[in-house]
Image (tube, rainbow, N blue to C red; front, side, top):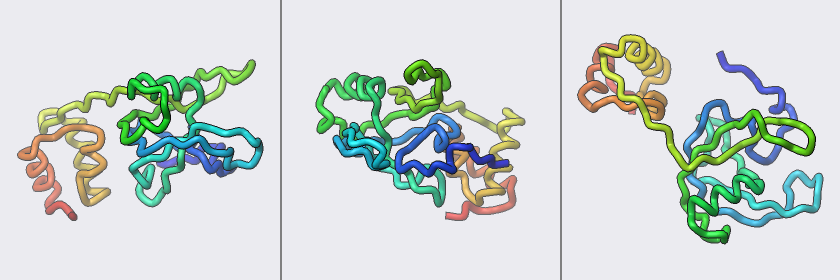
Length: 169
């Protein structure tokens, strides 16, 4: 069941913790120093734009403000302090539930350089195999499954055959 985060009501023009459900692999296409799009301040922010256009099917991917911590991570990932060099950088975006903001502890987005290793599943991993079949039957393809786990080409064909069909695309 899909749930709605309370922060969705505030409809920010930027990516927020309300938009990230699980750690998400994205590719930063560029970073620009831009005036705050919320119009709440006259501040300029390092703003990351992504190669990917959707965070989920049908849901537009918003740009992300890079705070000091995330800007330092980008400097580390690219070996450059210049935002002009932060181009086509693969990153993992996740929600950190312990970000200090003044005296408060809030949720915030963080960038990690590491993509998590995807687990290899086979028909012998009965629970994972059953979950993959359920996802295939729901989606009509293996895209969402293969975003999370690895399955050999041979086992992909076996899974599709067990579901009684051909891949939809």
